[in-house]
Length: 258
Ligand code: CIR
Image (tube, rainbow, N blue to C red; front, side, top):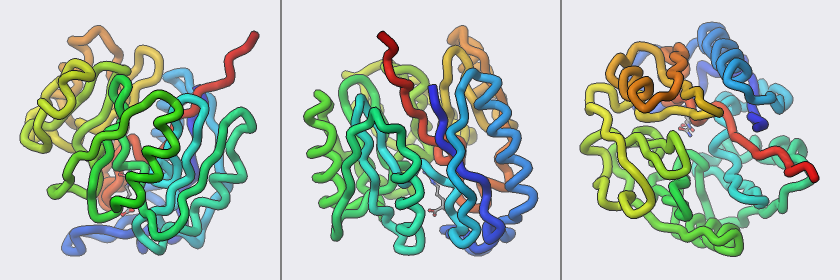
């Protein structure tokens, strides 16, 4: 498994934030958390595919929003925030040659944080960042891979995956009250997370390890109870810029060897 990542920008304090009343994102503190994240990915067995730093792009560590990969197809997004669109070209340049690469033309917008795969379905959040044209492009790109696309209304969060993430091809962590579990249940088993721990419903599984946000004992117990290894990662400063664990990487399959 390859994990595409990019370091925290020196301009991280200018990262986009929904709630401007909180403390400013701190580049040095976020960079330290990012290093812990990279260590956790490596410990879990991923090989890092490092993008060049993009100091001029405050949100560029959140690579998930620029790319959706499923099967052998990579869809380069057109991020919903105009300030983030310059991040995409360096992602395109770093893609491994075995992927079929598709771009998204204007006026489509879509953030990868809105796309969640469970079973044979790509669930896509209709959020402030992802529009109907973006959903159409997603469908065109991935229906040939045998995947269906289903929309989910997202009102209470930046992205669909803020409070929901797959921890297996057929298992979903979902914060209770965030979305109706019935939307997902024909594609797998739903593990509901207490709303007090909603932030930690965003997790990254690699092998038998699940990276989870540090400080959420309910989610830690839930993951351990499934026979998986929870690996807590600090995210306090990443969260100040509305980031969580999935946003910091895109997982890419390695090519099958014959
Ligand atoms: C943004 O607003 O675009 C960034 N500050 C946070 C992006 C987080 N990405 C994600 O959840 N996929």
